[in-house]
Length: 350
Image (cartoon, rainbow, N blue to C red; front, side):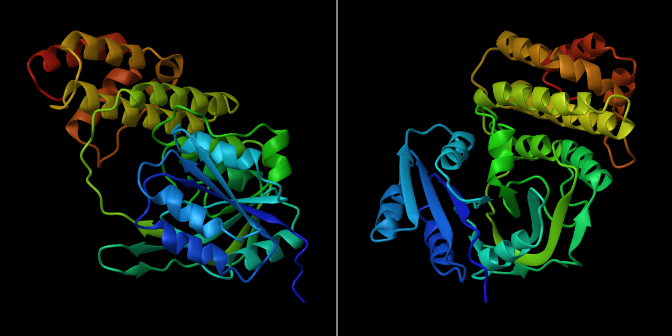
């Protein structure tokens, strides 16, 4: 008989997903494992998403609906966590869905393992073509501290598939709720991009072991949206929080070159991103002087100044990144800023 003593709280942050939320909710309602709690957090969605989840929750004893002012996905997930009562937490994005036996497989794995995090595999579906990408699930196995550190520094460097499963997202992981609560692990409000990476990296720092379940139970929907960078002033402040948070983790591995080079790579990626967002974005809404001030402020973040000198360019990098690597190696951020300043004045990219 199935052991249904383990309660799983499924947290779904919801914002502008009326097109997809039905599939997600249907997959939750059809779980073969019944000792679940569904927590739907409407983050002030302006479309019909709030209405849809209210209708879904009617006459369902296992579902909690929370409506809040729009505060971002980090706050929405935190709200869900604060209202969860299960021994384990499963995060699901509202445009994705679960296989019907997902919670059953996870509950069984949790009943046979005392690890605080259980990883499992995802599959992808392209919403335009309907093509499903299956992944090799491999063999279930224990992860030790060295495995976790390997995942960690790759996570910092934005390389998420080194172990097969997606390590940089809260989904495809079953978290022990007590582990999250006791360690005050929360998503950082204000981190607009890569808040998932920061949360996961911070969680992994506290693990000695974890478990990988060879099972593909999460369906990730590939939304083919625009890749254009939209001007958003919140991104810069969020980027500071991201780099500072990742830097705090890397600081605990002082002298570990893998962590140092991973931090250098993420710092450079964000340098490049802010250049494109603030300096060379035709849609920017600030003056040149203000853009340069913001850019210089980012370059002077202590974690950036500390780690960016470890950046090493690779053969695949363009000329601009090779120039950056040469300048950063000398730790001459001031000189680099001067070069960018001059090229920006002429409307040229570096």
